[in-house]
Each structure stands twice: as C-alpha cells, then as structure tokens.
Length: 118
Image (tube, rainbow, N blue to C red; front, side, top):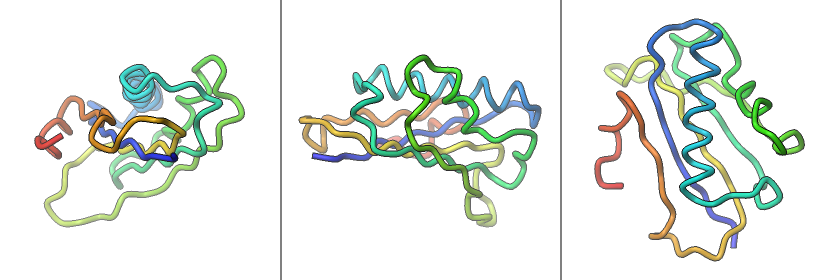
C-alpha cells in the first residue's frame, strides 16, 4: 500500500542554511518515526510559504545518505490570509504495511499547532 505522511515545521529566518537545516530536521524526524527506507518512497513534495525564498527546501534531502534518487519537488504554499508564516510542509508517499491510523505525522516548532489531532 502507498500511504502519505505529512509534516510541517517553521523556520526562524529566511536564510539558506536555516531553510535547509530546518527542512532536514523535519525530514529526518518523519523518516525515523515511520521507519522509512528510500527504496520505499515514491515521491516527496515540499511546499514553503511566500516568506521563504532563500533556498529550495528540497536541497535538504540531498544531505541524507541514500536519498539521491528519490523524486522530490518544491512548490509554493497557498498564500491564505492569516496562515502560519515561515512554514515548510512536507508530504512523503511511501510503501508500507502500516494502517492509516498508524502513520506518524510530524509537526514541529510553530507548526505543532496546525494539527493537534495528529
């Protein structure tokens, strides 16, 4: 079964190193929490709010050993009035035997309040 796992995190500053570090931190937590192997992953989508433009957050994936061939795409998050600023969101599609309710979605820093139900 292919399942999706979601995650989000906020960056402190719109600087290249901060954007990449923050995204890498989120990716590592999502991967570890869901015991993913790159061979299980179909694709990764990463979005960022309009106030993040110092770097492509997807660059963070290239810092992880073994993840070179995983397809990844960056995009802009919808600019909805009042939405959380400086936010990076990730969606990973991966093969797993886990049930939908067993998937561990990860929300860190200022993004922790986005989905308190998860």
